[in-house]
Length: 123
Image 1 (spheres, helix red, strand yellow):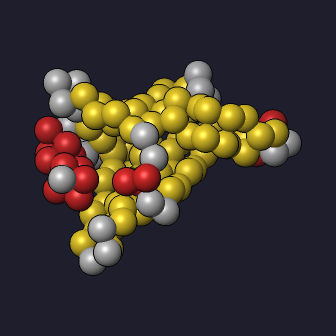
Image 2: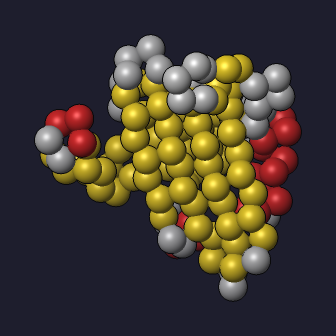
């Protein structure tokens, strides 16, 4: 099993710090631009598991999503922009009392270093 963790550009709980060499520049989810990101990708038996935790520190919004077999769903990769785009089929928004929203677009913008790590797993 191979596993990678991608982070950036900010981290910390009470006192935010900037990473000097982040893997992720930002992510966009709903109307939020999230500056705290943590993505774990693991590959086993030709299946790719992804878990993404994100925070928008300027709007005090947090969320997370995961998929147990990324190869079975549709996502797009834009190498020029180092952009991973995924449509989350169903999202339970805790900020809205657990309201289920369908087909939410999520974009993750990577640095060159982070993009190379991502490509090693997605190959």
